[in-house]
Length: 205
Image (cartoon, rainbow, N blue to C red; front, side, top):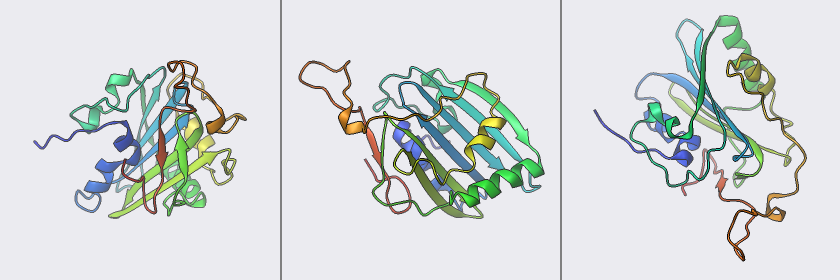
């Protein structure tokens, strides 16, 4: 088998989904909710089925620490090293249709706003998708747009089977004004990393 290497940034950017889109015949989505990285991250893998149903894999991360250099060998186990709490469920046709409708109403299949910045210390969503061989990407940042376009969050959280309460968005100072007090003296910084959105996905790091 072909073995690929993945890290957290390529996972959020869904490089694996993008590379396979239109080649493996699979329709799927990956949604990532970053609720201040050191506090909570929730991930949702949606596997759309020909009969209109969908499989939903859920993961919740907490106290992950630094992951920018962590690498593993298999996309299917990409979140194992971060002590993921996992959940699964099957969405019936009505639930799947409703979720897709909310995603469509949220412009979740793209295109994203070129240049949007996603700091680890903020609240944001990313949505990567491959449907009928077409790649799509979208991102939403709080409080830049106040999540005004996100209509799918409450429904997705309602499907979530992991018994860890959702960390909701809250008012924050701009990331550039916040200091990381755990950093060495004279090396304070607002955040550990920032992802930048391009015209059709995350920009290469």
